[in-house]
Amino acid sequence: MSSIRSGCSGLPHIASQSTAFIPADVVERVSDSYRLFLSLLYGEKPVVTGTFTIESFQVMKAMQLVVRGGEKELRQKPLAIFSCCPTSPLKWSEITSQNVVDCAASGIPVEFISMPLSGFMAPVTLVGTLVQHTAETLSGIVISQSSRPGAPVLYGGSPAVFDIRYETTPMGAVETQMIDCATNEIGKNFGLPTQAYISLSDAKLLDAQAGLETAMGATLAALAGINNISGPGMLDFESCQSLEKLVLDNEICGMTLRLVHGIEPREDFPATPIFEELLRDGHLLIAPHTRRHLKEEHYFPGPVIDRANLSRWREEGSLSLGQRAQREVERLVGAWQPSRLAAESKKELVALMEKEARRWGMQKLPLRPVEA
Amino acid sequence: MKILKQIAQCLETGDDAAVPPLVSQALAEGLVPKTILDEGLIAGMNTVGERFRIHEIFLPDVLMAARAMYAGMDILKPLLIRSGISSRGRVVIGSVQGDLHDIGKNLVGIMLKGAGFEVIDLGNDVGAEKFVAAAKDHGALAIGMSALLTTTMPVMKEVVDRLKAEKLSDRIKTIIGGAPVSKGYADEIGADAYGYDCAQAVAGVKKLAEAVG
Image (cartoon, each protein chain N blue to C red):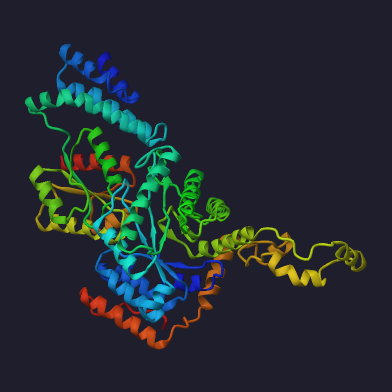
C-alpha cells in the first residue's frame, strides 16, 4: 500500500489518491481507518475513501482534523471524499445512511456511488438504467441535504452493463461509459459536481485491451466534463490496482487533460512574421514564439510512452510497455520523499490510529517499512 | 420416449407454458414421476447447462430454462414426495455476514434449483452459526457461501472450522464463491469446493453430492 502512496505522489496528472485496498494486516474493524491513516501519513494528495462501519467515522474525521488543523479549516478545504453506495435497486443500508448523515454534519464531501447493472439489477435499456441511477442518487442527496442543507456532494456512480455471457460487469464496455457520460449530464443539470468510475479496464494484464478501454474511457470522460474520475490504476473490473498501470494511466490523464485545454490562438496572427522567420532560418526550433509556447502547446509524456525511432528503441533494449512501466514504478518508489506534514501532526496521526486499534483489540500496529 | 425429449426441448427453448401439459400427458401415458424428472426435466437442464458452459447460450436462456423446469416441478413435486423420492439433495446458501451483496448468490440459487437440488436461501448478512444450524436442521449436503468484500471472507473460514469442530465436515460440505474469492483461498481455509461463476458452482455442488453419497 505504501508503494501505491509513493507511486501516486510522483504522478502529476493524478490529482487525488484512492485508499483503494483493504488491509489484511490489521483487525477488520480498523481496516477502513488504517488505510486512510496510511494515505495521510505518507501522501499529500487529497483522498477518496469511505468507512465500512458507523463507528469508524469519528476517528477518520479526527485524522483529517489533525492534517487540516481544525473543524473550520476542514470545512473550508475538505481533505477526503467519502464514497457512499446505495444498494440496487433503491435501497440504503443503515451504515451507509448514517455515513451520509455524519459526513453532511461535518462538511465532508460525499460521492454517491449508485451501481445499477443494465439488464440484471436495472432495466436493460440505457435510459432505463439512467432512470434507476437518478432515483438512487437523488435519494442519497435527500438524505444528505435533509441532514444539513448545502452539505457538499458529488453526483457520482459506478453503473455498468451486465455481460450475460460471463456474469460480469464490464467497466470497459462502451455502453458503461455512455451511461457514465449521461449521468454526468444529469448531475450537471442539477448543478452538481460529478464523479464516475471510468477509464479503467476489465483486462487482467497491462495489455492492449487495458490501454484501449482506459484511454477510451478517459477521453470520453474528459470530453463529457466529468469532474472526479475514479479509475486510473485499475484492472480486472474494479478488483485490481496495478502500479504499472497507474504509471501508464498518468500519461493517459496527461493527454486527456491536454485535450480538454483545446486549441487556442496564441500570438498566431498576423502569421506572416513567423513564416518570414521560418524562411530566413530554415526552421523554427529556437524561434522566440516556439520557446514561449512549446510547453503549453505540446504535452510530453514520460518514458512509458514510446516515441523513439526504431533504431533507438532497439538500442535502448527493445523494451515493452510493461517493462518501461515497471522501470518507471521503480524510479518513482525510489524517489519518494516523506510528506511535508509537520512531524507533530504525524505523531498525532499515529497516536489516533494506535488508540483506535487498541479499541478493537489490536495492541500494536503493523511495522511500517519506511519512516513517514 | 418421445414425450421426454419434448419436455427436455421445452426447457432448451424456455417454453414454460408448454411444460405442464406435457408433464401431465407423460403421467397419463404411465410414466413414473422419477423418470419424467430425470429423463425429461433434468436431462433438458443438463443440455442447457452444457451449452451455457461453452458459450452457445447465455444466462437469460438458462433462467428461462429454469423457469420452465419449475413449471414442471410444480406438478411432479407432490407426487415425488408421496412416493418417497427425495430431491438430489438440499443446499443451504447465503451471502456471508457483513455482506449485503446477494445478486451472485441469487443466481447460484436459481441454477441449483434448475439442477434438481432443493435450495434453502438464508439471504444476506448470514453468520457462521446460522449457516451451520440451518444445514443441520434441513439435513443439507452442502453450504454455499458468497462474498463480494474481502473483509467478509473470514466468515467462510468460521463455517468450515465450525463444521470441523462439530465433526460434521464429512456430512456437510462447503462451497464458496464471489469476486474476491479464489481456488487458493478455498484451499487455504479448507473449503471443499470453489466456483468462479454460477455454472461452476452447480458443477461443484454436483461433485460434492456424489462425494457425500
